[in-house]
Image 1 (cartoon, rainbow, N blue to C red):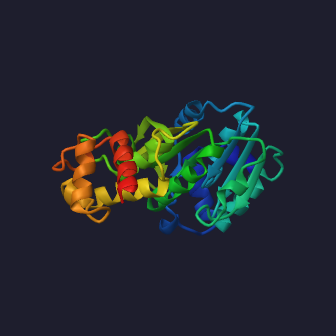
Image 2 (image 1 turned 90 degrees about the horizontal axis):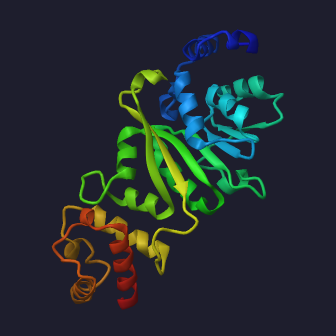
Length: 286
C-alpha cells in the first residue's frame, strides 16, 4: 500500500487493504485490533496534551494512524511494534520522517528505560493488547520516575479496576498499585465498533498522571506490595486470616488494634493509607 493511496482511504479501508494485500489475518495472540475511528485519535492527543516540547513513546504502533497523529504534535515519537510485517509497513510509511523512530521489539522483553532519551520525561501512549495489559502497566510503573503521564487504551473492565474506590468488587491490588504511582482518570468508553476486527468487549481510554512522589510513605515497597497482594488473594477472608502468614496471630491483632482496624474487615474495605500503615507496622513488629 503506497502512501498516496493510503491518504485517500478511511482507517477501516487501510486496515482491510493491508491485511488483504499481505494475505494475513489479525493475530489474536498479539491482541491486534486496529483503531478505525479518527475521532478517537483526537481524543487521545487531546487527553495527552501533546505539544512540540514532548517526547512520546507509542507501544503497539500497528498501521501507524496514531503514530501519524502524535508526530504532528510531538517533538519526537518513538513507536514500538513487535509484529515484523507491521514494522516493515511502518518503516515504509515513516522511514523518511526525522521526528519518528520505529523500533521492532517486544515491549515485555525490552529494557524500557533504554527507550527514554536523555534529559526527557516522555509521555507513553498505547493501545494495549488485552492479554498483557497488566504486565505492561507494571513495567511502565517501574519506570514511573522517568515518565510524566500515560494515555492508555485497554479493556473497560481493567480500567474500572484501576479507578475503583474502596468497598467495591472492582477495587483490588491493581487499584492500589496504580494509585501508589499515579493519579488515574477515565477519558472515554469505546464501543467495539471503533476497532477492526471488533473486540467482544468495550474499551477505555485511561489517563495516568505520574506522581512526583508515591502517594504513601512505606518502609519497604516490596513488602508493602506483598501485603496488599496477599490480602486480596484471600479477599473474601477477614484480614486476621488473610494476612496470617505475615505475622503471628498476636502480632497481627496488636497491629490492627493499634491502627484501629477491625480484624473482621476485608481487604476491599481498606484504603491505600491504611494498607501502608499496616505494612509498615507489620514489618517493624516481625
